[in-house]
Length: 420
Image 1: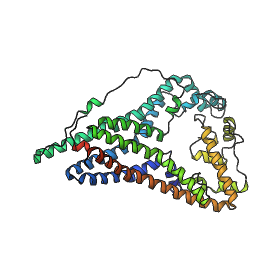
Image 2: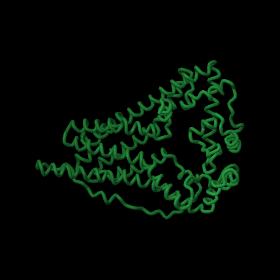
Image 3: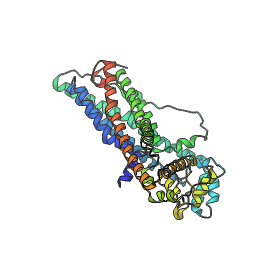
């Protein structure tokens, strides 16, 4: 993978790649080290147990968190395909508009791709079944990882600590520092008989991996607080998880926005575009010659017609790289996929703004090179800052919170036998 591709992946805060780097590469290791140091201030034995718990918790959660959704999606898609319906059909197409939808796309692409049109027809004839299958997919990709991370993993971890501490007690004839509670009482099923209308469900069922991970973290927070061993641990876990959710999903976007604004104000460089775009010679040449083709209007029809009529244009190739539009063979737009015109227009606006700034600079190539370097620096800085906040500052704030609320440096779930 080239440097440009790496920076592009790290700079996309709507993807999982920055999360992988922060979570597995930096945050987990730092948290394990800090956990040992904090607990070792009072007890090396508890520090050992707390660190082992943290290693299992952090890396076990990361494995499920980062791999759970793709795995469950793969399994679910296979099950949907076995039903005779194509899992690639975007459920957003159920809401027909004047320019795209199941029936509209089926008719429009019937001659060019009859097989795909037939797939759309089968889904259109079985809307309720397909909707229920997609709901099942959503359940599998969220409920299963939440259950594993929020309930099973903590239960396993706590029981392992209990056994180790009891073994140590028998060996050294010392008293176990906490009494393990029965965690089974927390794993309860709930029934919801309310009817949900389809309007709006398409947004839920078509969530990106990053949005589903946000849901996972919400469920994980509930599970971890629920399975905590005492009140002190519950409070600390709620504090930690709230901070983690903010620093994982909100802070990086705020940092990116701030860095882009500072770069524009201080250096006069527009860094709103992806580094792949800034490094694209065809893109820069079209700005220089004023030959870049863009949709004439911002309405849905103008945008979709432009995409269909200009599949090889630089603009369409850019939004294709961003996965805002998909194509079949012969450069024909995939009628099974919904095109988010609002997102496409936001890219067009960013390109317009960059083009104007580059032309004003007097040297488009030089301006693009400076913007590319600045964007790369900002991306790396964003990862480092957000990783530092997650890996160092959040644990330190957690330990300070612990000291203020418990008066101790020790893990409250291990050191205390306080009941709920």
